Image (cartoon, rainbow, N blue to C red; front, side, top):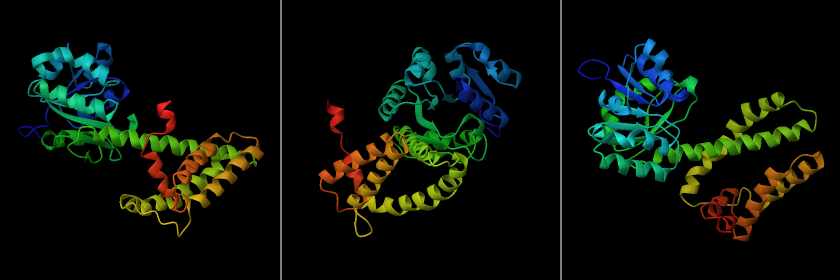
Length: 300
């Protein structure tokens, strides 16, 4: 709260996600100033009570907190580099996508302009913003996060502060997106495989998504995560070499079914590297040891 009222907030960038952020702030009663290069995108928000700023500098001047939601860090700099002294004393919450290094460089840039800085990552689609299911990660200095926590609550859910390293939010975002796409690719290969036997994908999903992923895969990962932290990879319950035999069966079954074997073949190639490195008698999680170092392909 701000002097007993909902604190003013500025939103820079009105793509689909930025628009949803502005709507959430308005719905929570925050006086909301918006700016976008294409000014007409603000028209519906203005009709809901938002104030349209003529320039990015004018938008920054309207609030102590500015939430930036543009395509990437280059777009953020294109929008704000020319704002000069308008940045001084403000807190920027940058919710664009990029790399951890870009986030850290943005912190340095903001600090040089006298602004506080939080980097963030939105982990839900547009329609979830402002609901209890919303998840947004934040990283950077704790003080601006605490100072504006009540305003950030308007975006829904529980704001998750990950730590003082400004790159942590985008690092988690990148890691989770990688996990998502790897999981989706695994599901799509599995779906193609069962299709070859006349099984519908929706029927398969009842087994794969409703049971196997949470109850089998999820439980394994939950149990093994702490062991990975301790560098413990006991092979008494099954070795990496044994798992590779099962993966080879997936490769052969894919070929026999007349579908692509690319996904399991990539898994086997990675496992073969781990065995060649001497981890064959440890469990499958020892694969992380080869993932922690650059692959040979990186240096070709």
